[in-house]
Amino acid sequence: MADNTCACPHCKCVLGKNAVMKDGKGYCCEGCAEHHAHGEPCASSTGCECAKSAHA
Image (tube, helix red, strand yellow):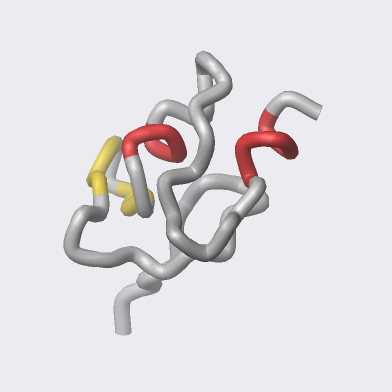
């Protein structure tokens, strides 16, 4: 069974219909796929704050 959790470190979001595939990994949003390079927040509606951990 495939892992359907976002590959972004610190993100616990489940991949949905808007999942972004990059380098063979699944991310829940473009911000996570780009490792929050410019401080983009996680687009999840769950209030995930993985972007804050990305630059901690």
